Amino acid sequence: MSLPPSYYPSFDAPCYSSEPSPDEQRLEFTGRPRPRRPLPSGAFLKQSKKFTLVLKEQETGARLPSYGRNAALNGEIHLHCPTDKVAAVEVKLEDRLALTTAEGGSQTTTILSNSHTIWRDGPTYSSCPSVIPFIIIFPPSCTVGDRTFTSPPSYNVAFPGVPGLYAKCAYTVTVFITEYQSLGFFKRHKSSHLRTHMMYQPRTRPPQPILPSSLSFRSIVKTSPEEWFQVICQMDARTNSGFAPIDCHLFIPAIQIYAISDTIPFFLQLRAPKESLQAFMRPTPSEKITPGVRAGGKPTVRVFLYRQITAEVRKKKARKICVIGEGELRPLPPEESAQSPCHLADESLDWEGEVKCDESVTIGGFKIGPLVVEDFIVLSLVPPYPQASPLVELQHAHPIHIVTDPFTETLGPS
Image (cartoon, rainbow, N blue to C red; front, side, top):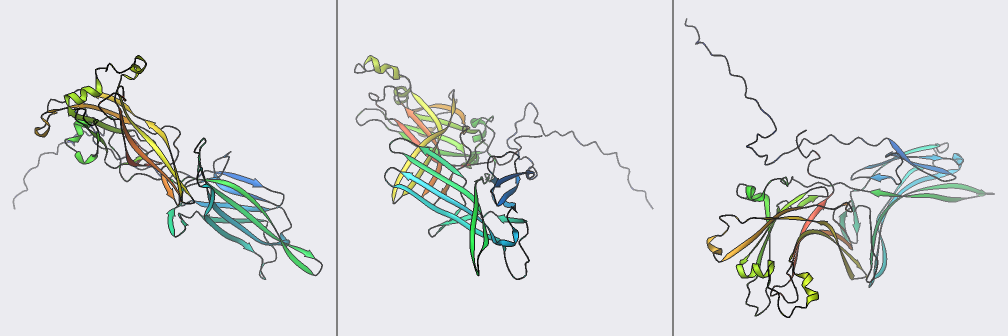
């Protein structure tokens, strides 16, 4: 019987680190999702003469109770009135949408109204308990007319002036106590109630992360073109000006769904014959331009975010726009291979940059019946001396979706 061959000892496993070496780049990182946030341990109290509403799992000292998507209203009713006279206890959750526009006037719509009887007198009960607990699951959807929508967040916006626009989506929770009241041989019911406003703040995330803003577009687009979406538009030239239009290419992360806290990278390229680019960047002032107009002798290149609020009241629509984030642009030198065979006569100007929502943004876009809140990334090009320029101002808005939370709460290795 022969012996088995001899074996050399195994080599040690190579060293591994999640951090890239100096000559490496991290192309993507998927952080481990954090465990569910623990529920707050405080309580919100609202009191009347006859009873107290206690809403649990709230931040200590909160001005209003707050709930997220699929949350449970966990609370108690503490009675201060004689319990043997209580006929019923009811909790009602409501959401009302109030809109006001210049042409349509004012309109209030109840988009959610859920009532829950948490105690009712009956032959099997001796009297109502002094403390009545309840748990009500927050409804994920609501109905406006014949259409169903995801329950909208609490929202309040005002655009005073002419024409004005006001929109408010407000949630309330109301407790109704019905008591017996004796009048000789007759009994009648007497009702009292207690109402408090509440905040509904559903959280949403994009389905995938975006590339870190620290990575250069030029280094990524060749190896991972699927990570970018190309927005194409054109800066027109005036009729009979003799100038060609400028082709505009704005590249943004392909997912097009971004968190409020995300820093959104972008790349901008303007491509046209040299004469058109020069007319945009370094024009020769015309003799027709008065000295007072020469202050506008620099071109404007902007990439920014704006939010559009559309309200419809009595079939009259009103729209308002507000800027919610201003981009930062950095000019780039031209690439050596920038010209392609199909653009031999064209030149290009390149920028890279980032844009992010400002601190005023606390909710994402949503739609609920006659109210639509939607977001856009906007490219704005204004030539020097706009009235005399052979080029026409450009503002192109591309729809995106803003959500409350990033794909992962861990933005890098821990």
